[in-house]
Length: 117
Image (cartoon, rainbow, N blue to C red; front, side):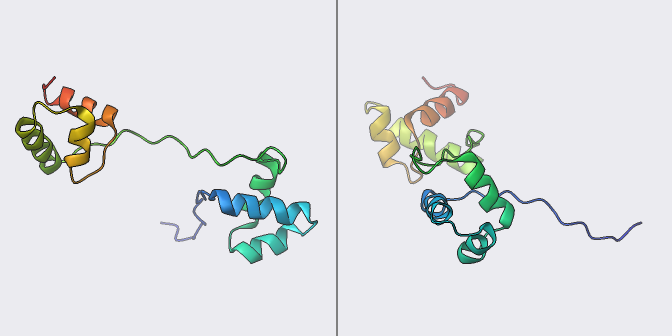
């Protein structure tokens, strides 16, 4: 086997503040290398932020959508117990009672998979 070490590709999700800082520094004519050293991110992350966003129209970063939450057996049992105990309450009330704060639609989807309407 070949034991050559190839660098793995990592994905960096920059926060709104970091992107705004990068855009502000870029607008002030700072070099991309200086910005990457300042914020402790890679040069390519800084380059992509400058390429993808404009300082005049920047309103925030849209994070990539994630797969729906998959419930463990324990979480399903807890959800089932709380739902049966509070069967007259609304979905919003049940989400507030649960230890994991879920959205109404996630709760609805999980109850559907458990055959509870």
